[in-house]
Image 1 (cartoon, rainbow, N blue to C red):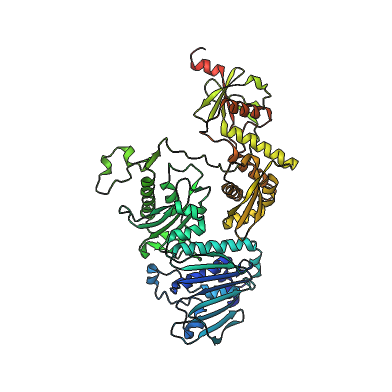
Image 2 (image 1 turned 90 degrees about the horizontal axis):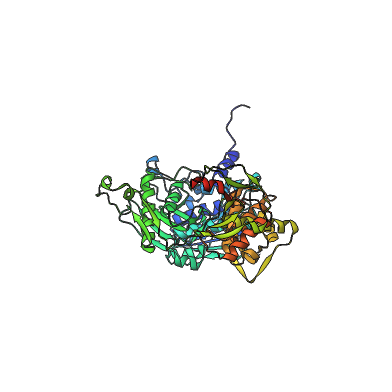
Length: 591
């Protein structure tokens, strides 16, 4: 095919696809325009997850009538004049692409009035072009109505999720905008029903109450500016006990912009090292202020990703600011080298003091993490250690008389010690119990007879947009295991029952963690039930560090042997290790 210039409509559609990925992208761009116009009240109303309509209303400065048509032209902006100004950007928008991109993907109607204008101006933009319609009486500010999103790019519609999932994504955008702008009153309505409404009183903790729940927000710790950090880091962080199985609880803002940054999220997690088990992530809302010239906000079409000229300085500022707060709140954490100032010569310090690490004292009681899901091991063997400590020939699925296994006790409240025929057996109590429960769940699945514990009162659970998407895949499977969930709004569900084995577990955390694990596994609907069973079993099993009495240890050992469970947990770890008497004799010099 010959080289040719794309028609303007095709070029506009391609550009719109880069900026406008889904309804939440429209909401984000329009709210950023409202905030740049110094709005203190922003209201968003959506229908069918924003695909049918999105209305964003603000009390900002508005657009003068003689500039209104120009505002819909591509690359028309009042925030950038020269290339040099790109390194000094302090506004949320600057490229002049939002309105043009939205108009290329939908029908747009804007009503806007400045404080000095006697009436508002109305403009409509769609495929046919842009036309100034009329004037009408209204308060100062702007209202943008977006209808039939992606009607001009129908191929994009097939990639949209359910209206509930798209609504949840929009809510996520507004929650983060509210975190960054607590002095602005935000309202979100879906199908005429109020989903979220912030007070605009300037209190970040109040906004976090809408995001994480009022109880969780009240327990969060405040991060104040550290004199030892190069850049200002403010915000709120969760207690170590307030953790999640993924990074969804970490919200990062750079110069008021909600961003994604591996450097910053890693710094947050490193600050909690020693307080969180592997596989768990903290909750945090952090606001980092840096000079505009040290951050590049123009590296991605939607401006969510940023780059720093010096990642190390940003990393250390975030890590140090958080760690100082954690040490003050949890004095049992012993830091070494944390408060070394630049004036001190670190080369004269011991190596242990120069390492910025810290340990947790025995008074802490961290919980064991939920392992990452893997394929269930097909190897059903018992690990046997030879004379040199290396694995010997594997013994496949032994059939034992339970009387042959005599429980002697427990080591470190984690391993059960038992005596068998010509061997000592070490049983990992968590892996063993997890294996027992996992295969019980699979048998219940096959027989369609779950062992269920109904809730006395339904438990409301708020889900993230990602969890909402996974719920579409997993809801029927969860119900078949006894986790009965009922839709209760756009991003909320009511938990009606749980598997009996999980009746003493926090139901909300159980559901959220299971959904996160299913999403992380990236599996189909057909294979979801095994991952869900593994997650339920892991949550319900006894933990490492939990003391068991003689009767409990004997019951667990008997169940592990008699219920034909493979000698691996569903994540592939061995449940039992056999140390032969020959090895003991060798170590004690008897052979």
